[in-house]
Length: 229
Ligand code: C5P
Image (cartoon, rainbow, N blue to C red):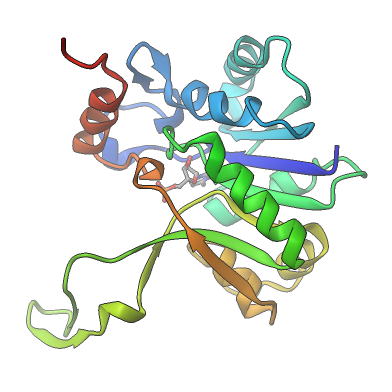
């Protein structure tokens, strides 16, 4: 395949507070990871799917992947993640097939991300030859604080974008950025930009929100619930 999606699912899920890794928590009867994979296996492109999980979850992840993949095109690899998200992405990069030239990195925690968002990111990377990340305008007023609870300046929100995943890149750019990364970054776009490559922002989708807290999980359950009569 020419496209790979690295699904990072090796986080501990501490903020969700359910005592198990977030990607394995049930969302309307199926693990969050399983829900995330639905959209990816629905892509038209033949895709390599690399799932990055905690060391003691490799077998379970393999079962989940097999269930979702069914007869879909593409194939999947399960690898063990690291201490940080960045280390987990790096573990995923090491598992890429040789033929892959576009790499998407996706948070398993964004379980309801539609297939169309993956397709848009792939199209943008393919046509522009640079990184592409989905983002949404920020609706809250954002304040810089002094760290002790006092409000300082208000940040001009028209300049801000709340970015999501999947974040897509030409493989060479992403790999070079990871080779040279000296700091820890909270997303791949920051790491790639720090290496000097351009990253475009495309329209995101509210459904690609990240499940972080118990409230987010309830919201996702509601999204999946059948519509009332
Ligand atoms: O912690 P946060 O919600 O920002 O994590 C985003 C994604 O990165 C999650 O899907 C999580 O499983 C993944 N992650 C990882 N390895 C880590 C930390 C987070 O794969 N060490």
